Length: 194
Ligand code: GRF
Image (cartoon, rainbow, N blue to C red; front, side):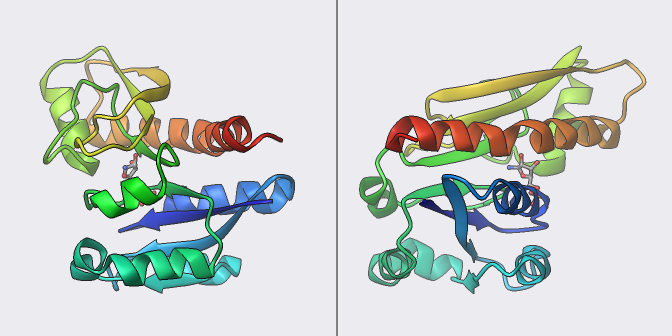
């Protein structure tokens, strides 16, 4: 069994979907821990309901207390990290401790609509304002650049002229639900063997 930690900052719908997927599969991967930097985030209720340990580590500690963060990851024997709506940059010490073992999902077709400030609703608003005919999701390795790591997987959806940012968001969420857990499973199996 390979043990994943999910890092989240907000609502946590992806975290919930990933947790449930691996709870149902019960095969080679399990979500062993959720780490969240925002105390009021919806992901707490979800992790608690699903029986997954969730630990609050504030931004200041994530950025400046490598000892604490690495100690928590060691304690839970974490092999691999998934960012799901995690709003902070991953600090260097974590990239070094988990080389090519941290992946993120971004709600656009990178390199379009990525980088600083491009998160959540902002992305879908920018996509609609630019008159894009399609958008999608990008699952990528995390490196020191914002949304800049090697792309692992993309999936597209059509955007119609009458679509609002909320409509685009709904389409993107359904792509995330459909693909993210399976892609995580494939990457983990590729890295560690089945
Ligand atoms: C998702 O759209 C994800 O692509 C982005 O942030 C959003 C998180 O939503 N990185 P949730 O917290 O998983 O509900």
